[in-house]
Length: 215
Image: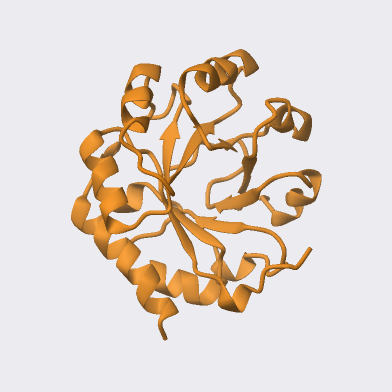
């Protein structure tokens, strides 16, 4: 299988923590490749099954729906899968490789880069569709807007490395130029308040990702 060439990839954009239809529309209209729905009850951006079903009906073709979980009971994940048409699962906690693959779905594994976190943990998840590197410490909830040193982003070809943590419209171009990630993921960096997105910030964020790749 041919490996991806990092120098010719378009950096994908995921807008995470979508809770409202108007925010979903703003993300889609701005050109987001994926949207994230949070199903971890402790998160300030969590959605109910009914809210998620309503949002998913508004997602057009070619936009990926990602469901985020954090050390949740397997039964809850299955309930969500029975009710919501997710395209990808994202496991944001300390979930084991066996747990992640037990649902028979493609998944992204988040790797905490704060504290003693390291991208080396990716080796334990050989079947993951991608790895999201976030600035929180192991065991902490993401979405805090905390960043990390972008030069720690792996350059290994053949894997989808996704950059998150502390990204905003005013720094994402520098982050993409430095890390050359497969994708970037943003939540708090395009918000007015937790769970309430700012359409202008979404447009600016995606525009900056596109701009830096046109150089």
